[in-house]
Image (cartoon, rainbow, N blue to C red; front, top):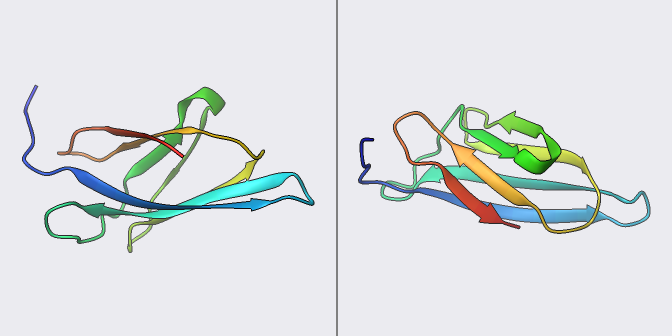
Length: 86
């Protein structure tokens, strides 16, 4: 497998809506070296079978989540998959 020189960087801001017992995870996927946004990156919570793609500015929002910790999987063509707990 091809090793990549750049790592994806993700800024994740978790927001929980306690009264509705629903929350969301939102953030921006960027190239670690250039800080440019990565449009079309795939962001998933594999355990929940939930996923979205980042928009043209690298922004994404995962909604309808119960409060708690989640393992995110972020993938983009030409980059190594990044996994982070949030």
